[in-house]
Length: 256
Length: 236
View 1: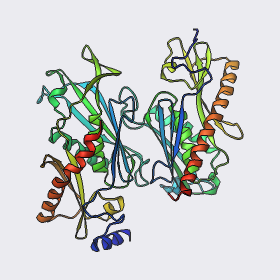
View 2: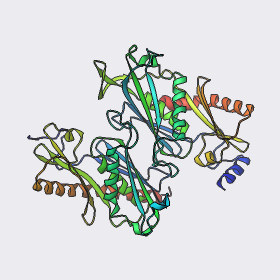
View 3: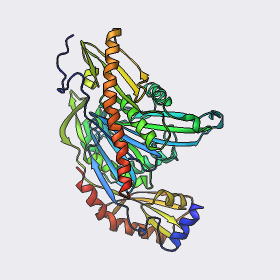
């Protein structure tokens, strides 16, 4: 029922909240929202709200990258954020969000993993980037990706003593973010392609595409939904993502 | 054993700074944030709603279900996400702390779900969670016989104190932590736990102190709940 209504709206060139198809909701970012974390941020896109915290630990580098640290991204879709979420271990949806965020950061080389090496082959920093949606009003993917970036920008290193972390004590050394990849998620409803979908639009969508862009280059993609896109639709979304990169970058650049 | 002065300069019967806000999660039927010192709890209420699986339904009343969880980044050393024995127990005692004031008989066969997330922890998280949850239930418009506030009291060294912070909980020469929840009007104790060692007189003194603290918290809860209607008046 609701889906039919949304499809008919889109057919008339309209959206639920009066936005244009290529228009984002208002985005706001707040950092240092949780004192015990190494870095944290709250990202809001309209009524969608996501909290992201970064915690650090010392681990062992992977044998195939002995001079690099690593990141681990997890998402918990707690029922606090939506009547549609249930308690339990992360399901498919939560895992997908975490993986998309992870790839955006990893593939754009936003964080230089070499700088996370403490001792080659023996010790390296591992960043745990944990995402907690607080209100799901659609497009958790983009809000999570942006929130994760803001939390990383906000991150200071834990104190290290004899190569062991002293939890709860921080240094003034910030994590250097070399690049700021921006993730854009589009949905296809009827013949319309919409950016930054609302929950109800997500439910009515037949196909979904997320694109992580940095400096006009594409670093990660994920196609979702049961239907497909045409080549020209894909090109249109890529053009739009590249065009809008600057606008969203301004928001994240302000975050400290 | 002498504990002469609190690290943060508070008096022994003084709470940390409290703030509260209602209506912070739009999709929830009711929601609230409660902060005491550096501890921040967020609560959301969904329901009364259908309860699945069906055999869990109670034909006489609603089932109140509480879930307490700490964010992985809320503590100094990362907490592994997901439930633990500790969070399971806290969820249970939270439910018991709130159940007596909620008019569950009005909504047979349904569930009222309360979710609590601690996003920053510095002691007293279960009490902060209960304070937030009680406000979220009221905000959801669920009929309640009374309001609930909770605070931890205890003994640090030789002193009976209210609202222990993390340092006091970890006091080298011993600290006793006593989380207490009280209903606002009838002053019924709906949560009482203790670990440590106190005499009976000390315990009664601590509960008396908790009563004073809960009154103060109750005022903050009521003010925050009123605030939401002020906003409504302005057409928001």
